[in-house]
Each structure stands twice: as structure tokens, then as C-alpha cells.
Image (cartoon, rainbow, N blue to C red; front, side, top):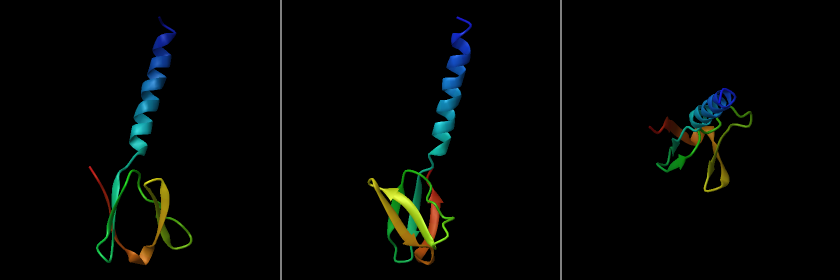
Length: 73
């Protein structure tokens, strides 16, 4: 019984960490288009693009075309 408790705690801690990694967001462009993403977009790219995944495909939008990125609660 005492060996199961640390294992259970490790599984629970891992679950909380995985849940915290997912940050649903919306990306709104200057032309009014809004995309919903399961995870926060990557904005620190060196090539000037905002990257995110939508419907299993990577989407790249020029940073200057992005009006706002908001976290969905």
C-alpha cells in the first residue's frame, strides 16, 4: 500500500502539469478573421510569423497581420 501512494501522487502531479500546458486561444487578424486554437500560438519566432495548429495543420500568419491573441477561459 505504501508503494502505491508515491506512484499515485506522481500520476496526479503529471496530470495537473499536462492540463496546465493547454491554453486555448483566439487569434484575430486585421481583416477580422478569428481562429480558435487548442494551444497558445508561438509568437517568438525569428521569421516574423505567428504559428499555431488548426484542424491538424500548422498555420503561419505574419505578425503584422495579427490584431490580437487572447486566451480563452
